[in-house]
Image 1 (tube, helix red, strand yellow):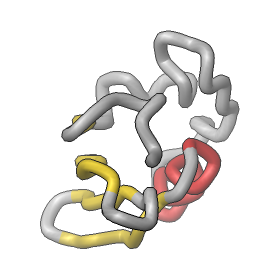
Image 2 (image 1 turned 60 degrees about the vertical axis):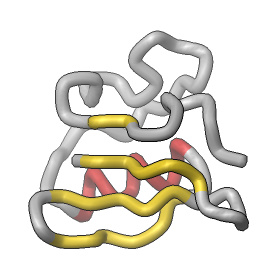
Image 3 (image 1 turned 45 degrees about the vertical axis):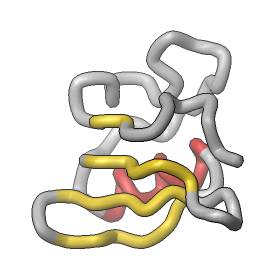
Length: 71
């Protein structure tokens, strides 16, 4: 999964493989995209944690800032 840099409205485009899943505006949105991509058990969101979506660290490539960057 690739999370692109924030756009002007603060959303970050999310892609899995060659498919754009949509735009996430928070870690909660991102966890929903993970579930829709068929990745289960990753819904616990803790923005202060080193791995903000438990178990997703290896699955997400952050571009233009990490999980703390949304604006």
